[in-house]
Length: 173
Image 1 (cartoon, one colour):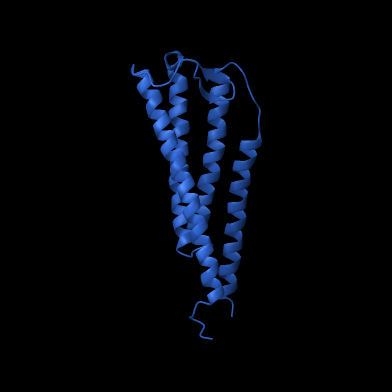
Image 2 (cartoon, one colour):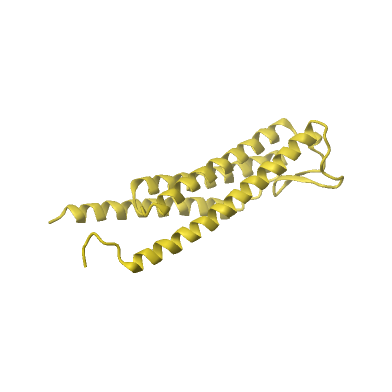
């Protein structure tokens, strides 16, 4: 077999990977559209166009829920926009990461960078939620999101070390 030929097993695996990537992209895109629509309706409600029925509550963190958009303080809105920005930036980074996977590039320095960014976005979201809780005069020490973000950063670091070892081995004769 020619060393430059791609084996049929690899083609099948890449086909499966591409199918999963398409599903993930669809789900992330649907979530983005949902967030944009609901966020737009919330902003329209602030502008005086009422789309939400009475009794609908807006929740920005586990301890911070409002029954009317007019009761939301400016600081909470700023933090909510920051959370939305983190979400959209994370979705964009995820799309870039999926592009690399779809191209068949799996363990590159760019992958590590994207995965680290995703981990730090998760940690940043945890910080913003804790700030929102503090504005609600409460504190929920829920460490799960913080631990997940730090774990993602740790995995990226391990991947980077493995990538460096692999590069060194390829240079060794």
